[in-house]
Length: 101
Image 1 (cartoon, helix red, strand yellow):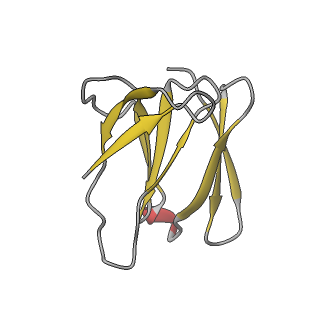
Image 2 (cartoon, rainbow, N blue to C red; image 1 turned 180 degrees about the vertical axis):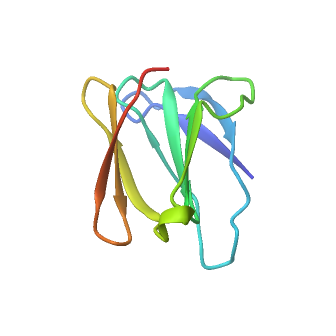
Image 3 (cartoon, rainbow, N blue to C red; image 1 turned 90 degrees about the vertical axis):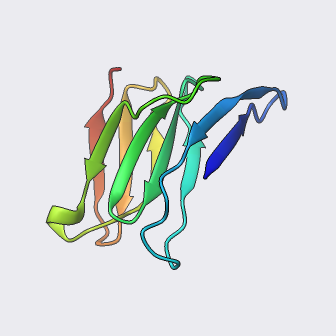
């Protein structure tokens, strides 16, 4: 499964990323741009993946597995400066991760 990425302001094509297959039919992937429009976040199952936005398919910059904590991501957002990734979880937590590729 692939996601084509477009700039929401201009509509310009930015590239594509390979998405992981959903672990079950009830789980869908969600993507969003970072503040810098250089990375995209994929949420599926109990994983959070940060992927570079490039025309070529690239490996993840980072993968965060919430499974060992018996939790799963529900939403994610980057801070305006792109240095912090906030991840909301099924258990109601908001986890903050320093992001510096």
